[in-house]
Length: 349
Image 1 (cartoon, rainbow, N blue to C red):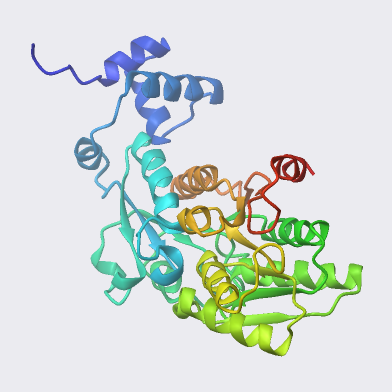
Image 2: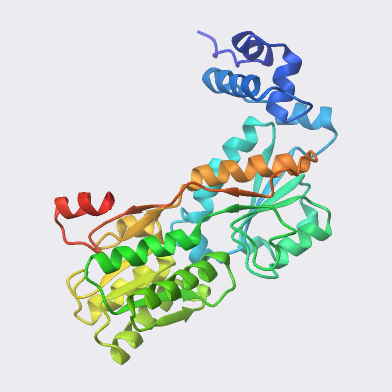
């Protein structure tokens, strides 16, 4: 029995009841294709398992047919020891969406940003959560490469189209959850860097403590410290403020370090101190106890970012900001007692 025949553009055209030209335009965002027809073509391609030949696309278009995904955060935050963190989750979905439109995707992690970005032949780039005055974003724009940011870049909101990650809502969701679980001395652990997530959550925290008339306890850490930074800061915080009973450590690496510090101090989680974090990644899920986190809808966000980038690349600038779906709380044992009814009730609150 020979190898299975690879689906062709003709197969997709027959399945979608359109011409080969329409399929090509729909999958490569060229010309005008009715939105309903485009959706039908994409569905047919997905069901058949059709993958465009990037090499053929490149030859026909006279371009690299390649997009770049650039990490702004250091590896201690964006990936961690497993290399399966925030950045790679975005990459998996972004690469699939790009490929369906005939583009390959290269990953540019922080370790490679010391290299000149102009050595990469790319037609556009997505920068993941860039900080203010992000050097990679600045370099890409200077080269004339279309850029979209996943999460707005502070100070460049008007210049760079972006996916709104709804970080204010995320912060409010986590803080309100801690309050509902009985925490009244709540500290916020965020990075020093000027990223949208830190800025927006700090604003949500200021509104939160003002509404409930609580004491403000903000601890700022260097992202490069990762878990070690969260551990060190938790020891110092509990020494100076022993009555703290809730910690919102926005970065999951910080949160894991916080839990380790609390264990060392003999503080029970969540009985003595409740701990929550933002990203529902491997760190949050494998921590002991598992960390309450948030579904940030990263797969959807990545898909939206690629789509927005390709729109701007072909000159369609009708959309500048695209909102990600609302964040969803995932309550776990780090902030609620191991009572299934409590977990179920909180998940619907």
